[in-house]
Length: 88
Image 1 (cartoon, one colour):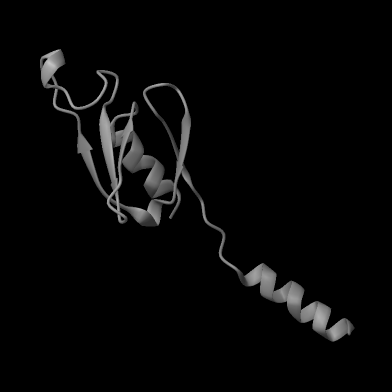
Image 2: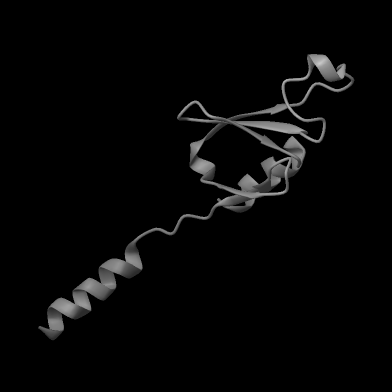
């Protein structure tokens, strides 16, 4: 029994941990994203008229994930890219 328990503990130690990237939505909520699921970062287009915007004016970067979701973030894309690099 003790050998089985030791093997189980060793197996748990070998499981890779996932470091999530934390960004903020326009309303201030924290969004946790698995960096391995991020497929692209797109900077928000500056200077658009209010009626032409697809997202709130505080959105600086649009994060696109592998499941097709678009996540608006108030951090700029350079900051988010740096956060992604730190998780690797």
